[in-house]
Amino acid sequence: MIGFNEAMVVLFLALLLLGPERVIQTIQSLREETASIRSSISGNNDPETDEDEEPGLINHLEELRRRLLISLGSVIPFAIAAFPFSNKIIQFFRHPYGGNLIFVAPTEAFVVNMKVALAAGVIFAFPIIAYQMWMFIAPGLYPREKRLFISLFVVSVFLFAGGMSFAYFAILPMAFKFLLHFSAPWFQPMLTVERYFSFVFKLMIAFGFVFQLPVVIFFLTSSGVVPIETFSSYRRVIWVISFVVGAVLTPPDVLSQVMMSMPLIVLFELSLLVSKAYIKARNR
Image (cartoon, rainbow, N blue to C red):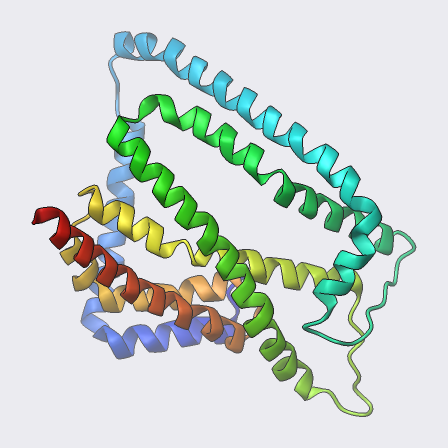
């Protein structure tokens, strides 16, 4: 959730970078787009067309359901195999903090071990999950789109791992050093294991998703869905949105918001450079 401090940072940056008139225009355009989407959803459709499309939609949903069940089923064996090693995994993720963790409920330690084992199961089962995603998407793609999708998917995996690694090795030690600096001899931190891992995993996963920005921008610009000039013209708006995303995805403190927003802005600028180079090379 966005706290008062984060909202003030976003409002200040919006007024500073965009100016009051541009902020009002952006809000009005968003309201108009939302109204058009609502009207298109609530509009009257041809009943015969709906009847023709219904069997195809049901088949797609059934195929999606089958792929999801296979993906979920593949996680369980890996999670069971990882459960005996959950203590070692917990020790690894404790290093950014460095101190001891406590638990205040009889079931808390067991639940955390289960969650860690389940997260490890998802990581080890990721190749199977990715294959199921590919089998669901591939029939609707042309050969050129398949090659582009595979390339972007491989880059996406490396970016996600890079984002999580960046959060673990760079952001988390800095965050704990800053946040725990406010302790005192009469005001000592006692972090529970459940809240600690909730904080760590949320931050790492958030950075993993944020690092997908280059893939999204490259796909939109290379496919012609959004002209690259549009991103360039809305550069300052996207900077403000970056701070909004940082406030939503991080814990409620300004430092975490800034630490996520700044890499997001850097990734956005690098994405524009790579997209421009690719479009020029393709045109030649």
